[in-house]
Length: 269
Image (cartoon, rainbow, N blue to C red; front, side):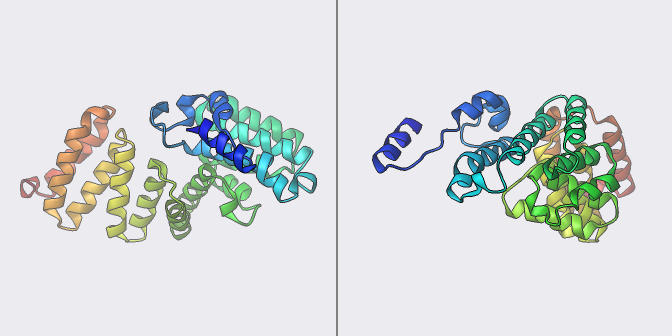
């Protein structure tokens, strides 16, 4: 369809952006959902890459930003940060983290690179350090989706469940969905006593990551606690139908058996 789009743009004398070169550089497997097989949906990391490129090559120029405040070193830093974030999402994490710190040594005040360090810190469990880095902007909507997930995880770990849930819900409102987002939302909702919200969040976390039996078990426990035995039975069937896609999950499976025994398993068909 794109050649026709280019032809139409030429006739109308308007610009058109072709994402094909960026996709080829990024690789189709990393750029498109379902390992490159879904030709209609970009991955979140590739969407961010396209936004950065569009802003640099089209939007910035149209708004006059190419010659004012977003040029030279700033543009280069933004481009490097975008590439490093893609590497963190799909490459060797240790190598990418080292590259982030190397970039930060060269440009210690560069916010895009500080944001990346926050993402690295969140993933290794340095949540206080992550919060320190992420808070420098003062507006978490300026962070990429991956960074906002890292921010939500840090808030959750540091006891700010309301804040974590707010970040997760805003991502979902913006139509960013992933197992990580639902996982954070489920944990935060449960801690806040909002079980009716925690159950569907936990279910969606498992549906998007069949290897996460802990989330499947969490949903089951909450359903049993709420006395929703019919729904618990249906959920059990769904888990069993998809258990082949999961990792061994030996610990979760044993814990599941203990919990179900303790809660009168025979009440669930």
